Length: 118
Length: 106
Image (cartoon, rainbow over all chains, first blue to last red; front, side, top):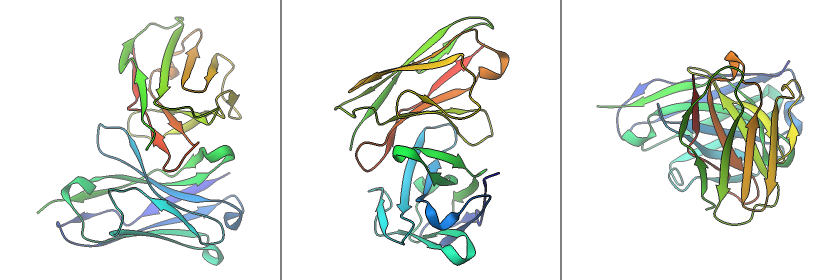
């Protein structure tokens, strides 16, 4: 069974930093593209960033470019999101997501809540 | 970025009903269209990928159609567990983008 478990969500101040982590199990992590997708409470979904199995960054949303960096460690089955210069509008639940056929998102973690507030 | 628009934003239905949700892209996305179901407080779950293929374990009362710019998700014989929010997503051109969601309520 595919499992994705996020951690690291917290309350942070504007301008601050946070690191989110995701631990994967139940599949061969090194074979798949991985992503972060976020959701503002009560709103829609927004893709944040993605990384190929061989560590190439697919891209990042314009809203986070230059501030968020995705990383992975295939040896540890882990995905990370380094978040700097946080803003109020980064407040959201962040999901670790496994890439699937044709660019779909076929498995999602339970999410971790990031709240940015002074 | 490709803009995805779902309609309606919300709808009410009853158990046993048939409902259809529409997703429209502002440019052609071939069949690179995926649908997700999300229940309150839970992560989205993949229902359909590549416009027409049901994810393993998804009941056959879910069906889908479309290509290019216009797509539909139909749920026949609504069951209590189907009341949720449905999101479409295009994976044709990066960045992947989502519709705003359609909330299906009793």
